[in-house]
Image (tube, rainbow, N blue to C red; front, side, top):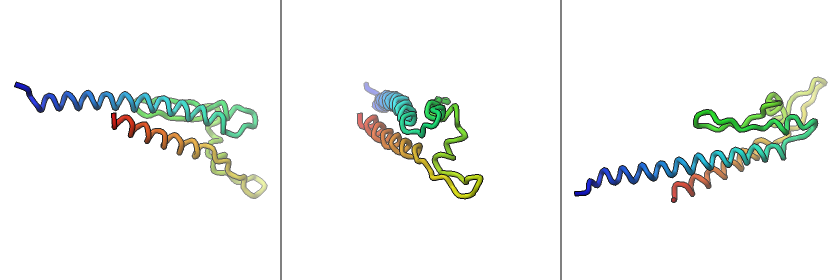
Length: 115
């Protein structure tokens, strides 16, 4: 006699494992792609800031950060006050890459769930 509950549980565990693997692979690819894109679209004065983008995996989350010039990310993205008065114009580069990565991950998640 077939135990229907056990078969359903087994099928759901297999499905869940497959979805988790697909999502982990997608996160890895998307974050690497986003860091690479940030290296191309970031402002370049000396090149140190541009070359500093890294992906760091901490347990489950992936973090994209600037290892070399982390202090500049907010100042460049949002603009800042000048010492002599006035403000610098913001150079929006992180927000656009972030939105692209989010959209790409949502598509990957939908694809992983449908399989």
